[in-house]
View 1 (cartoon, rainbow, N blue to C red):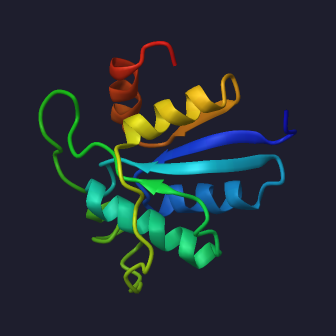
View 2: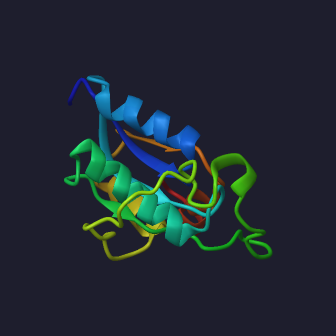
View 3: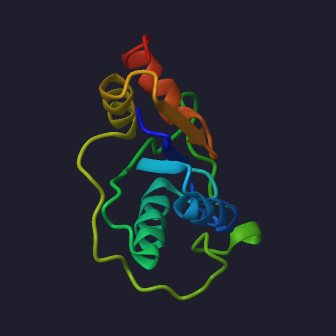
Length: 143
């Protein structure tokens, strides 16, 4: 077993999550096995774009990004918080569109697959709404 903690970073990348992501990427104790995105600071489509951009800027396009839930389990997404993180979730800094794309599939299934493949080794770092985790638990309560 590796000395590194294997994590899945479940995120709605605003400025705060971006700082946490860069810290995790630089940590010698952490191995990020993937990013899953979620609505929150921005909608899930923009959260996915932001996660891809962050990894491109960091030179870590080897880490997969998987798009997650668009809405909470009950109701619909109530909208972004541009007054906190800007319209783009990144403080309105003009950033080029990512050249990489998200991995096919759902965040919930990615979480399940990684947990089952790495039994007892995955830590889910969920810094946004917990909907992806809830959906994964619905599909595979054993995780």
